[in-house]
Image 1 (spheres, helix red, strand yellow):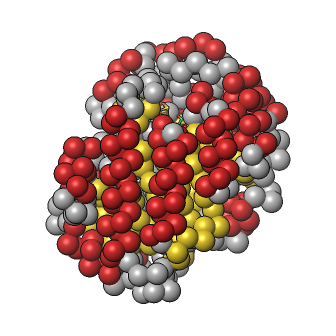
Image 2: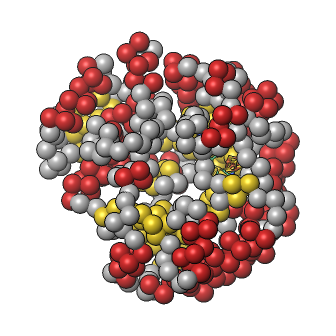
Length: 439
Ligand SMILES: C[S@@+](CC[C@H](N)C(=O)[O-])C[C@H]1O[C@@H](n2cnc3c(N)ncnc32)[C@H](O)[C@@H]1O
Ligand code: SF4
């Protein structure tokens, strides 16, 4: 890596799971605006549902997710009741649009338990016209058992995403997450027995005390379990936002060039094992839906990352959940108490959001295509001096090419796509949001 590339790798940039990004949502969008946006969805629009469960049995030191530890059953039961109420509130403001995708995320959504998962799923079926082509859930391999897996089969889950992270015991120790290979293998076996064969594994690089060899061994072990997808996330160390990350020994974290080398080595290995690289950090078996969508230029990016989901509207359900509608983005109250106050009083829990301008839509489309395809047609977007200036250093290093019609990352430039996307972001620099490293 050149020293210039190393400097780029140290730069911070949003992950662009949306544009405008969440730090630029404001209180100007509240429950009334959201209700209006829902009510104007045409009957033939398709819906995607995201249900957020912000609970975990224990907190991993590195975790950047919106979650908290609960040890008692009562808060979980109370929260499940709120989710049911919110489903009804949303159903009252939508027509008979078809739900084409359901995703349970967290946190650890299986904390709801088999009975509540089934009850909530029944509630969804009663409230919406549910015909999901994809019904996915995020699972922690340390908490997969037969009653859970049976419930997942019953509610029609088609895909499970398992947090594997890293198999090396010394890294597991350093991140506060002990999870032997046999435990992951047992969970995978149970899911497959229940007919849930579409599996994604999350792996991580850039962890404390982790070497490129550790990552290589983890990939090799993961491969033995034949997941159809692997997501390879670079550890985002943001202790100013997630204070428990102070438990991570910052001195044991790899530097920018080491991180880039780890990501590249992992990528080469996954490709040599037959996985197709997708976007910035995903890999899929050639016949997998994500690989097919990427090849056809149909890959999408939303708050859950890369997806095949192309529903017209995404409804976020639960505390902190984000929704995306044709008119803009909305976010629910992040704290459970605030979320509960709204839902218990029969109000949508929206506290922030943003209504799209024509400029947002144009830039959002370019940023999404860049993040998905590493290239974007500019159509009638006129490259202004701010974009040209922001891209110039990347172009000078041969990482990006741009003319009036098209912007494209070169092969060497792909790891820096977040920086190229940032060149089109007019909000960046406004406000105090700090981001993780671009690589
Ligand atoms: C909601 S968790 C997955 C489900 C379950 N809670 C688990 O951990 O197994 C989402 C994923 O985000 C990734 N992740 C969490 N914190 C991260 C961070 N600080 N930087 C990068 N990726 C992170 C992990 O790979 C994790 O599996
Ligand atoms: S990584 Fe998963 S299990 Fe660990 S704290 Fe975060 S959400 Fe919970």
